Length: 603
Image 1 (tube, helix red, strand yellow):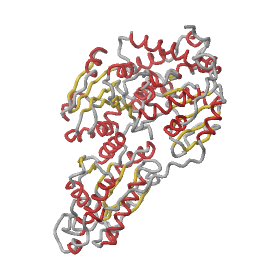
Image 2 (tube, rainbow, N blue to C red):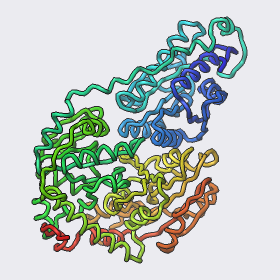
Image 3 (spheres, rainbow, N blue to C red):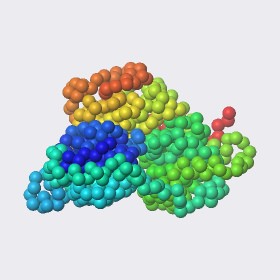
Image 4 (cartoon, rainbow, N blue to C red):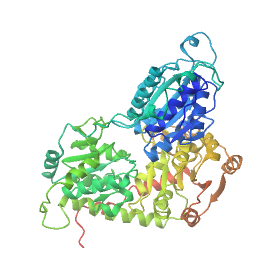
């Protein structure tokens, strides 16, 4: 690419964009504005960058987050000065907590126009607080070779910090003076003889140095292997390479002979054949009704290997909180991922590193005389068989509309490899409870960094953009919270099917103590917590040009999702009674006591 020498701003912006492309930039999401015009034009004119215009900055940020989540590559976000960048804040927080690479370029007034009532000007210094991996304010553009070398170096640092040691957002505040339009002047033409393609020859992101760890792998494996009552607890994980993650955890489980409790947002439930020690029904096994408490006590482990954050399950967290087993928390950054404040040690490793280490070890004879493993492992697997059969039988025979049956059915009918975006609140919990292990290699995604409902639709559209046909499972409130996301639909390269469970409000509040605090005749619970809305989803779809389908039967939903379109968007509305669903859910999560007896089933 040749640089744009029409004026200082066009040269600066064209060097900025060319440098980012050299580093690996493929996608930029921009929102309209005047102050950001030089950046927008440079991106739009570069042949190797896909520019996606999105009107609403909050939706734009979550759309970019979705693209970056799927690809693992930083996505550039560009907005004008003033409050525009503030609308990025929720997505920046999610990117930080979920470790997703974003490169935020907020245009700004130059220093002489700040703090003097100049229009559309706010304090943008460290606008996102401590959430970015790194922050810098670029210099005001200057058309000299030393300053362009400074720009080149700063961008390399920014790109590297968005990826290593762990991915996350990076914020560059970009002050720009007039002229913002590409009007030709003589300010940059003198550099034509100096700058050529060779100017970018040395551009490279800082080398990754995450190969050295404070704890050696082999001694850890020796410690774990001596334990006969060990658990692997796999929390939310959305790796770019899910198969490598699954193989690593399976190798660890096989080497130790430990059961693996995998939450619904773990790729492990999508590759069950790799791991015969997989347990998905732990929430039922660890409940409180008569008979369950005995099982929960007998299943207490001595040691736990925690893969990433803890699962969503409240029962599992309370059980670990009460029993206090020794825990080893596996995380590439060695971050504190222990909200229980128990006897936990952070281990700065990626699961894939554990798998690689195990592959180099000499095989050892089995510790147990049978192929079934330890009695402790057998107890977990026996409960898994019984409880999984209990859930599958009950859900399979359920004809009435029930929120929890939707994810159970999706696990059986979605085409192999389908990306599935799951909204927070009730949908992610129903996935945790009811999603069965399978081998369809489905790709679950969820904004579990901050656990919010904001940007759900935009994130799903970003994941669908340029990828395979995608499905979003959401409640009505999460969808309505982000209806501006539909504004990016004309730019969508791909397809998104939205399955919305419309239960007329926030169903999660039915499961919280606040649901029983109101007196007969009180309306504050409905008005202030569940907040039912009156939007007609079919008319909403018509306004945005989205195909709409009302789902009346389970067979209809299965038929609609067994084959997905290649382009466009559609919405499938499943209407449910909120209180009835809560009642059914409670029944299913309280299995008969005889299923929880800890005797080993005989073949």
